[in-house]
Length: 153
Image 1 (cartoon, helix red, strand yellow):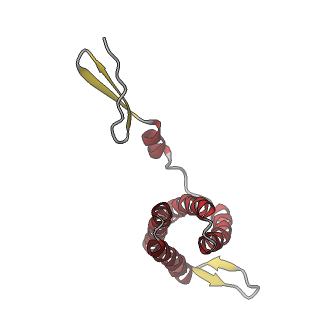
Image 2 (tube, one colour):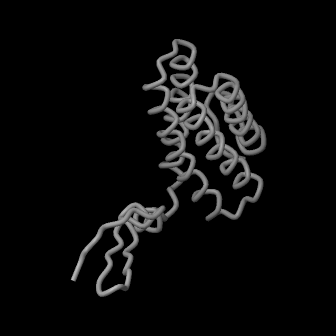
Image 3 (tube, rainbow, N blue to C red):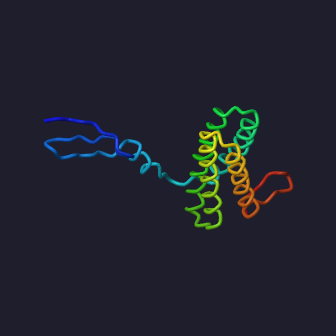
């Protein structure tokens, strides 16, 4: 009887026993499926939005300063928060906001890819796309109050 671990894409363990290969999905794959959680409350959404803006500014500053390690951390935070934002808008069934959140997730992912590839043009394009997704949603769903704060329309 021989045991031979093999890495195959997202499969982390494959064992050959008597000529048959048995594969078990990796923890990464299982974690991805479990990542779905309950949508945020309105208060949690507001707190998340207040984290996104300074993190996006930090991302831009880190990229300008060529501090790509910290920029990558910023991009990862943004991607995670926008996944929460996506769940929030999906639960509310607001199609255009869902689209903006998906665009923001894709732009955060593209930012990470551009950073990894050291692709300055890709990085600039991804940052513009991310800012555009934010602006589009804010224009459609945010109202500025007299005291300078915002509320959702």
